Length: 428
Image (cartoon, rainbow, N blue to C red; front, top):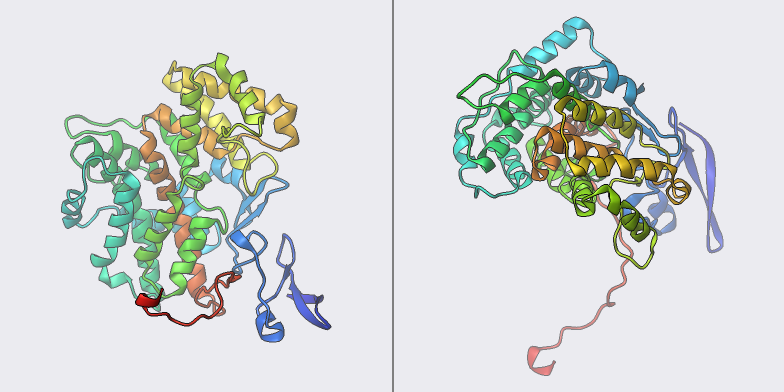
């Protein structure tokens, strides 16, 4: 609510702009009427100081290292809840009762299969296609198969589409992996958990039963929960922007997947693991630490620091513990993991990293965990997309239901040529 004003002076004129306060977090200056009143735009590349929407879903305080979903701290959710509980929470606003959770889980488990013709769709890709390329194509194609849930004006159809996307994304991702390695697709198994079902579809084979390792299942549960939503990041903003035009939900989520694919966003955990592989051995760490401190050297330590968090990423603390559990369970002896452990300890004690607040982030640990479990690096971002679908869907639903929602239309600072007359080609 507006309870005060900010005064803007432009030339000889002054204008009062309402200041709005949320339930928690910084106040925002309401500039919706700025152009009409002043004839001027604001200029904010990357929108880092601009609130693009009103939301009740996720709150982040980067300075304090706080991440809340509907008010619940992320570490509590990762420790105690199931992924289905978090999905229900993000979609509906509150944690479910036991009956609500049972019904929601049942609904999701009954939407996990893909239309059989989509198996043929997969075979149109090359075997070496990146899983994210496949996921962009397949998710976008869902709108061609599920016409009964693309009317965004119908709340029931919106919810059916939301359930379908959450349910089918593990199947889509697992099939992308199976296709890349030349193995047959496995159908979902409804008696398994969301994460257990995904692990079986990814690593199981028809020739023998697949036993879900509870430690690995728990690690994947945490990874999915920690990646479920993260406020108005690049891919979520992409989903909202696409949705603001009235595009169907499958197209909007495909747009989010395309944005997430970028190395500065969803590909960061892959980049972090590639960096660990480049370092190779623990004894080479001092060399790379020195390079990271050298402003003239293009090398950067990946998996450290965060655009939002200026404190320890709260998700990273959970991943730190999970990485130890997974590596101990699997008994893996790999120099890469030794490098990760040693680099983590050095960075947490080094004055340079402490002063610049370059703490290990969630990408640093998740890449280590996923690699230990057996996922190729090309699947890392696909797994991110799988988990983030829940947040995208929740944010999309919130946006569609917002009476103040308008089609996205950013402005610009134009610096090109002013008007000039056309000259025939023979006179140029």
